[in-house]
Amino acid sequence: MQIGTCWFNAQEQVLVDASSGSSWLLSEDEFNILTLLSKQSGKVVSRLELQQVIAPKVKPSKADERLNTCIQRLRSFLGREATHLLVNVADQGFILHAIPRNQAKQALYLSKRTISTKQFFFIIALAVSLVFWMGSRISHPTVIAPDYAKQLPMQDGTLSEIQFYTGQRKDHAMRPLVNHFLTQISSCSVFPWQSIAATISEDRRLVSLVLKNQDANGLRFETIKMMSEDFNADVIDEFWLKMVGICA
Image 1 (tube, rainbow, N blue to C red):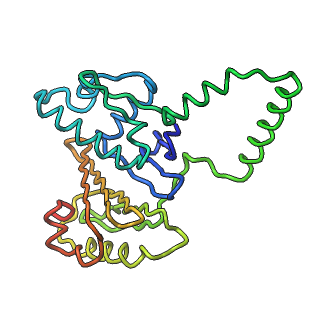
Image 2 (cartoon, rainbow, N blue to C red):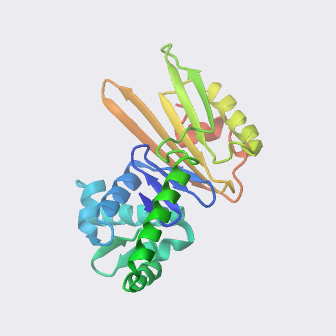
């Protein structure tokens, strides 16, 4: 689903900004909220409905705080248009628009104009031609491969998959940071995760990590979000990895 300049890829649980090339791997809460809002696009979804999706057994005050945090993150991902795309309806809930409301009003106004039969068929033919032309030149948005990936051996002999989404496949400015991160993880005395998916924004101010592990107790996820003026290799060391829970 397209939301403003972003594409919500529900299959991969990723939000991609087509204008900047940035992509974010959504946490479970962020994904569940955006899924519910997108299914009811253009309609108000109550706070209670959203709270039940992410925190059904949590106290209302805590659930509301958790909801507000997720909404704030989603707005930061959606960018400048978020004010008009993800709207807080006072004392009711939130409403998600696929396009800004001013554009929707303009489209509604234009749809009322009458055109001749010849103009109508010309527009249809032009639209069909444009769809085929675009389809032959762009890849399907649901296929999003990591820009960097590596497998690391775990203590039990299995391999752990580390994936990075930077949106800079051609520009390798991120490679030194990624390599340093992998080197530090490799030196962990105890590394309890079967996979790590990391998203780094183009300006290096936002880093999102989703850690996954499955054992006898079931599937476990941990999400780490970090904001920094400039996230660089100097930040990543053994102490930092243990502090955020990547190394045990």
